[in-house]
Image (tube, rainbow, N blue to C red; front, side, top):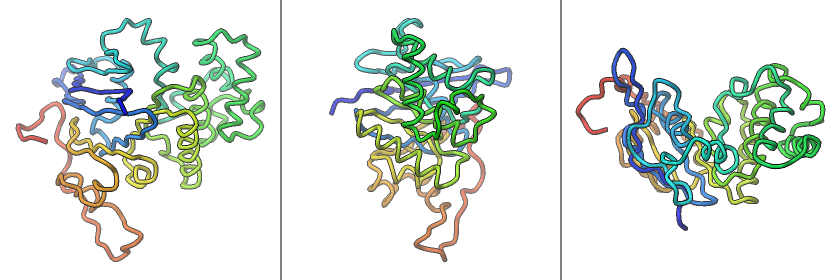
Length: 286
């Protein structure tokens, strides 16, 4: 199947007083319709900056300095800002890592879901409101009319994440970027969120870029995995072969540091040292 999203040799740098931080350094991958790609790595590896680069949402002083992000045959780095505003949410949606930070604290969450619908369609406010209730109900929120009237601080982490899911999937995007969608949630809520993502993907054929550091989540929902280290992708391939026989030493090290339920006597081997400074990368190949 032809890819719906291709990232080619992407470089995103942050120009700081301390130097140039090469947060994303030559990243390339592709995503086909209905496919889930797991992007894994340690905190600070550049996963979230990669996601923000795809949507051209890199904060100052960051800047995309090289590469291409091709969506449906068009390079998103060359389209106008007006076109990008249309594409964000409508064609490519994102679930941010911390839902409470991503939601507007001074607006009821129902209004925020309605705004997404009204920004991209000609729905009346009443129609958008009904659709927002239906979406929140679909995401498993009990009594959606009551939840819609609440503010983000009144919601638990799981409820806020479901609201974010409702907003992201409101317009049935072709690509969904999920940045740590199950972080800070207990295992029951994690399983429920992942199940809803898989069900919606099956119904709508959405391609999902799943950013996480949880190998268990990747094993459960992804078909392809890319391992990121120090701003670069060092290994990628189908999930099962890569999990069974990782080739790159860093990938092997990640698996050695994971607890195994099937091997309770297995001694964990934490990765020694720290990731390299992205403002002063060594000459060695990642």
